[in-house]
Image (cartoon, rainbow, N blue to C red; front, top):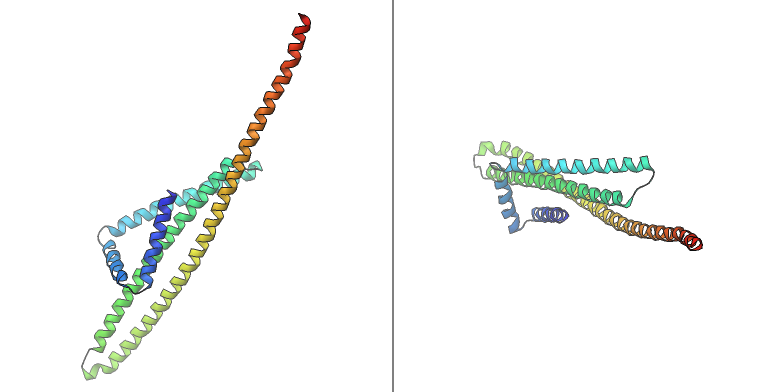
Length: 219
């Protein structure tokens, strides 16, 4: 499951990078997104997003349950620590998938709006009647203002994406460190169990020795 989530995240990041720069792949990606948003595409996307959100909420609830159990017991066993790391990584990756999907949707929307505004501006500039020059220039200025606003929003989205990507990388590194620590706790737990078993065997052998000596004396 983790491999699938990582693959989806890297694919979404690649799509965002393609949409951020004007390349031939950008037109192809926009065409694909336009087709996805037609017909049953939006319903399927919303269904998948809702499923991921439900699973993410379930992971968060499991984390809260384990944390509450730690507080009640006053200690944590290695198995619960491993489960905690697993749920944390799942919730982080699923949240990243949903956030990047939202970023792709917003980028596609703003890019499409920019294209529509530019076409409208070009159509207004090509109009030839003299009596409509003043109103046309006002419309051009208004459209230019809207284009500037959309470009500012696009830059803000790219900045937010970069910030969230850094936060995801930090959370992923933290989850990996916690998983390694839990593995170390599990190995230490197994070693203590083995030592406990050895001590029990030695104690049983010591308890059996006096009984054997008593039997020899009786004979």
